[in-house]
Image (cartoon, rainbow, N blue to C red; front, top):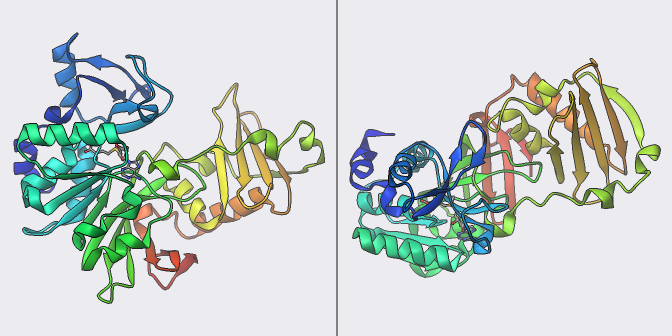
Length: 370
Ligand SMILES: C[S@@+](CC[C@H](N)C(=O)[O-])C[C@H]1O[C@@H](n2cnc3c(N)ncnc32)[C@H](O)[C@@H]1O
């Protein structure tokens, strides 16, 4: 946490914005466990005060009961990440901020404590979540404006803003956000490609002419995606019908599972490969009995590939089919990343214009993909 945020941290407790029934993330097991304030107020408070993400809604509100639902759709982010992002946002007194993704409204309350409630607007796509956030803010005494709507459109009626912060992940950043941010302003947004879940926060400075926003990524993150931009696993059987493997090209690779898959959610390798391999989704299946298949699906045609890593073999077997050889592309991207000194996400950058996105390494002139 940067020292300028310490007073807000002291004055605005996260617990004032959490529901009685919530599902803190257990970092050891990767599971979310229900905690009910009525049943165990001490455990509830302990989790509220701990540095873990807490799920507050499942399945867009369709799920009821205490057991976790299928996929989380709203949460209170990990406090250390909340404060790292606020530090990256670099706000100054008197500035106006738009937040996309109200959730519990804790982040919006921190911003309002620092800048004043009338300088903060927050948008939430889910009506129930938006109403709960609005109530919590009013109860707490920071009645800032909560807009129930699609944050992808931004909030033109309240623009321009000096800062824009998204607390959900995007693959496509709308140019409307650049238009609604004042020249010299900042947009902080978790961003990733279609390749997989890896993402990082892009910190984009809006150009003086307002025609672009550009900057480096600041840190790897793992946010839930904006509703309309969620990762949908491609339908495997449509790509690889029964027997399709018999006609595939078979080869092998010396790239190892450890090199290619990295260690953990925040490894830069997946993010970097995704910047090079366009219009491809990949799914690394769980390892069973020392065998781990990683699958690749083309998003503009039905090309597919599977690489099967085995603990008992030095080389992995590769199956590829379709107009594109997706493993060859992924392997080339991996080798490019390794040859360039295995850069972390902080060496990559993004530029957004009305024409789309450009990614680069070290310098906006060193373009990776448009
Ligand atoms: C990780 S939570 C936000 C955490 C929140 N900032 C806090 O302090 O608790 C992400 C939120 O983004 C919301 N969201 C998803 N898509 C959205 C969209 N298109 N517009 C606005 N909000 C969206 C989700 O409903 C969810 O509540």
